[in-house]
Length: 326
Image (tube, rainbow, N blue to C red; front, top):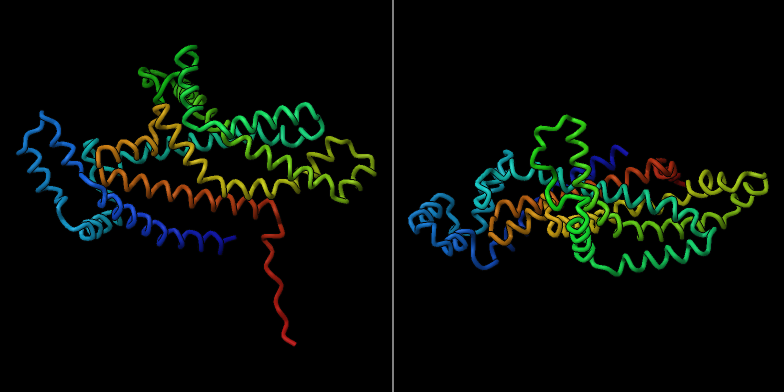
């Protein structure tokens, strides 16, 4: 386990370096820059734009800019966001926390829906058919359409806030009130994300349970007179959980991409909405920081899935037997 963690952490170094290099190169290949966007604003004078160009030197070759940015990034300085007029390091921390909270809430809610229903749906044909129809419908609808429907629901009913992570009078609340206000803003975008995640885990749970219930040890448990609930949740589900845990690491990419779409449509201030606004304004350093942190979250999610699988299956923690020479 320790060797796995160390190996994955060391692998993050070239991975993040490659993501930063490719992002820097591709962004610099795109036509225009932040100062070109500024020049289209008649309220900003040419002298101001010329002074900013001289300060940030956007006309240097991209590889020299990358080397300078990398040297600063190693000291914790990811550059300056010209669009937001603040250091990128200050801008990115809250956005990472918001994206992580949204992704984890959507994943947890999806699992709370999928695991119990997937474990027992095979016992009730009507429930199995209904869940199959709902899963197919949910997977066929794009994430942005679900997010738009959620925004329409919030606008029509007034039950949920539209956009943001806190209310205007957030600072006046007590600590429990602040938590309740944050959860009130979180529940609708997390539900949209869970609607996309739950069908995948539901189908995998159902298939794994059917395979586990066909094994000989299940017949033995039933022959001993164990209750069906104990057979399903104590014996079958424990062995059916391994493929589900494996999916956790593999689904981090789709979870983050879905979270980014939900953030943009529902005005959730996370990495996705920041990346889109930075791309539109050609805010180079903020965009690169978003891409690097997204790659970091993806790698850490895959590592977490592997660790959970190793914790759930003792066979993966055993050292391979030594080979004896004859």
